[in-house]
Image (cartoon, rainbow, N blue to C red; front, side):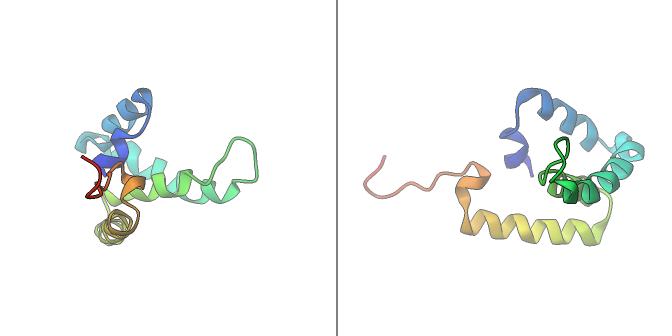
Length: 95
C-alpha cells in the first residue's frame, strides 16, 4: 500500500496519510463505503473508476476480510506488473 501512496501527488498523499491514522476510523469507513459504489458511476464527469480501489483500500484498514483480499490483489499486481507499483525490474543488460 505504501508503494502506491508514494506514487500519488503530494497533496493526495497527505490526505491518504491522514485517513490511514487509527484515529481517523470514524471518517475512513464512511468515505470507503461511499467511494466503492461511486467508482461504478465512472460515466459521469466527476466520478472515476479510481474511486472503487481507493474505497476498498480505505475499508481494508478496518475490515479484516477486505484487508486479506486487498493484500492478495496487491501481491498479485506486484508479481505480475511491478511497474504499476513503482517497482522497476532491472534486466541484466541494465545497471
